[in-house]
Amino acid sequence: MVNQKHFEYKTVSISPVGIRIKGDDISEKLADLLNNRSNELAKKRWRLLSILPSLKSEGAVAKLLVTFERAVE
Image (cartoon, rainbow, N blue to C red; front, top):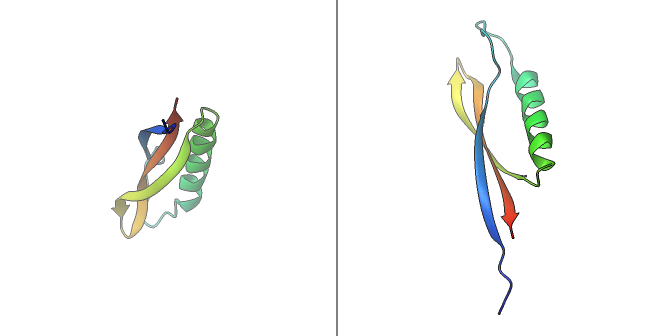
């Protein structure tokens, strides 16, 4: 019998906390949040699978849906 891997998935919403002022560029804040959350989950063997913008505010992405996967023994 072939050993098949099974996976589980986790989707999290990432967005900066606080009031956003019109015209603010929050790219760096989103990048920092994404790096921190990805590294935190990587320690638990989660692997980043996809990133989708889920909220735009005045043409800028304000929230991300990020999906991770990990193998289940």
